[in-house]
Length: 405
Image 1: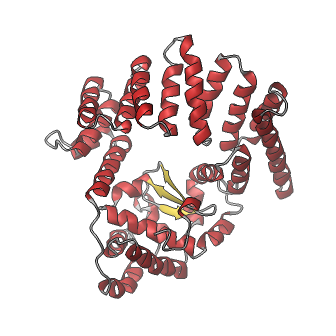
Image 2: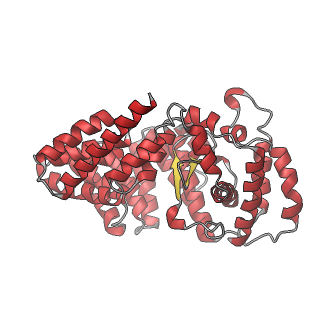
Image 3: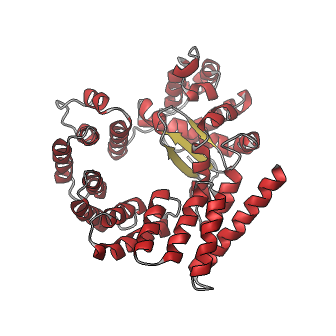
């Protein structure tokens, strides 16, 4: 769909925002944000694709530029530009900082990102073309519009933000019906895609809904893999370590080479206080997926909690590899700072802390730690240069703040 929109897939970032409210929007450049609530509320993979096609239509139409202008001055969102610039100085993930800035201002965002009639109609029409070019069923767009048309009458806390921010659902549906009727239905989603879609929804349900809700939705009479996954998470959160462990063992037995099931087993064990066993699962996951920063971060966190001082260096190495691939994970940066401090590397610890504060928009704290890192690290070293970059950007942020005030 991105190629059909003449957009480079490598230049567009799609972020999943942990938020129960069904919503999706574009902001901060070529960035698409999709709430977990939307992913679980929609009824099919094709509907998810239709929503993405619509948001890609906003990107292709240049609508996000006007959205970004509307965001200026909105509390909680106005820091988007500063966060992006600061993260660029940190080392290559400005969009992730933008994601953090947007996610922390949801209330303001919902009021500031309301789209106009012309933009919505344009995005809808463009989306149909993108769906057709990708071989996906354009009728799914009608299904999405019909789903949210029923929300138009709702007001207050029970109204979906996606319905509120994307108005005129009935009108838009009428405008598309004739064109969709003349379009080919597209190819059915592949079994592989449907498998991963179902697994995604089950995992999100398990972590987002209450355990009781999840267990009602996925009863033990349902022996499918997705249902077993959802129940495993629900039992872990309850907590019922025995049943959660048995369920995840069943998943691993069915797919022994799946790194994400070993990662899940590691998470369960670590959160149950069994760091040594967790580290073993995470090592298996890393062996199967050595370039997944989240899994490397989990391994590093487990090793930091084994109580064995000899594991600290291995923890630092795993966390450093994670940061090298994704330097916008606050939790991994926090753990890396802890590992470096335990090893007596105060300059490296201060640098990781400065990077974490930048991502949080805590620029005075970032400046203080960056200056400490620059004082302690060898002059001219990569870490020293990064610390100097952070000092420069925090000074720039401070000047911009003074100018705006």
